[in-house]
Length: 468
Ligand code: ADP
Image (tube, rainbow, N blue to C red; front, side, top):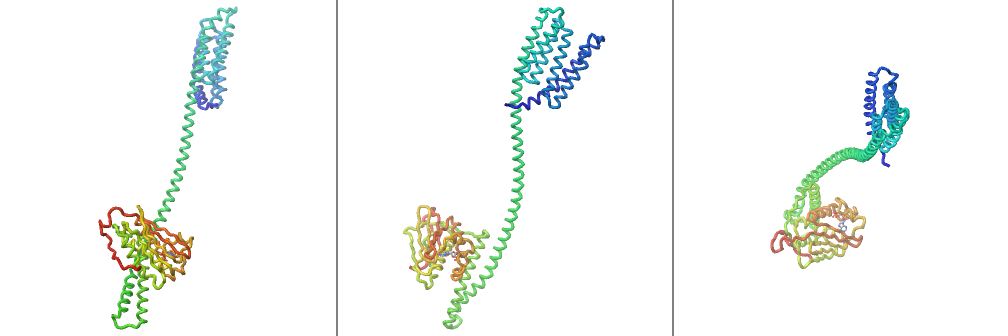
């Protein structure tokens, strides 16, 4: 059932205004009457109103103020009807307007108690008015009583109207109050959400500050590391170049004849020097990549030349091992948009590893393509990689087996540099490997469709001699 908080409140407010107003008016009228008729014995019924009506009305008003609204209204309506009945019993005559006064309380009842209570009050007041009128007519005469029919009928019409109006009014008030309650509830919910949002915002802001600090520290740390690596690499490169070059000049016998032992030592110095230089180059590349200063110069590139040059650069690494070098090339070479030197560097890294980690068997460079992509695969029959290590080999400085890597000399940077280079070309590197059986690294690159091979001659790599 619909609760009537709001119409109850409104009923209390209405009664709080009506009770003093009606009481005050009745009090004043009765006071005037008794003032002009000093014989109080004859007008005792008006004195009753002057004295008791304010008291009973105050009691009713007090009850309403203390949230006993129904009791307060009932007291006020009952005492009012009682006082009118007393006056009527003393003063009634056929033209008296007193019975119409009951209509006021019929209406007040429907407004402040319940809409349907107006009929009850109408019934009671009708009986009371008949009784009061009957009391005044001596000897009793029914014709006089008939004159009450009009006020009773009119009061009934007013009771009906008051009932309908009060019913509609109550319904409207309750609907509005229901709506109001919902709005209030939603508003409270919104306040709660707002508070939560503020709290979350506060947490987010402090988290953001922490992240900012951490980022700043990380950037500073990275900058210091990059600067350090740059400086060290540059400082080492110059003397290393001198060592390698002078060793080469000496080994040519420019400064006089050399024994076989001296030539052997000089070529070892040269070999180690070159290796050190390539390690330094890797470190420098990595430092540049991390600093975000690694610039590539893209151009439509002939992949055939890039692959051939990479092969020529690395086949010497097989040394005295029994490895067959296989070129598995396509009949039609696709064009790619690349920085030829850097793409070649990535392929050289893969081929270098293949030769490094293969004792015997084969190293194969295979190139295939489809509509969209070209696949450059370096396959070997070398030591392979355990499955659990495959995901780690692209990490910087990661070497699967430190001892093996040491024996074969490496920095653990080659694959991460290659990955970066290939990704900068819009491609990716995949690896498949079986431990002790071999590995397969595949570079996937998008095919360049802008220009044909004949339309441009951008690649500047010199084709070397093939090993096959
Ligand atoms: P490194 O300079 O040590 O070769 P890389 O980044 O090139 O560094 O390679 C990381 C690791 O991945 C190597 O240490 C090696 O363990 C493994 N790896 C790379 N290529 C091969 C391969 N063809 N066969 C077996 N292991 C390989």
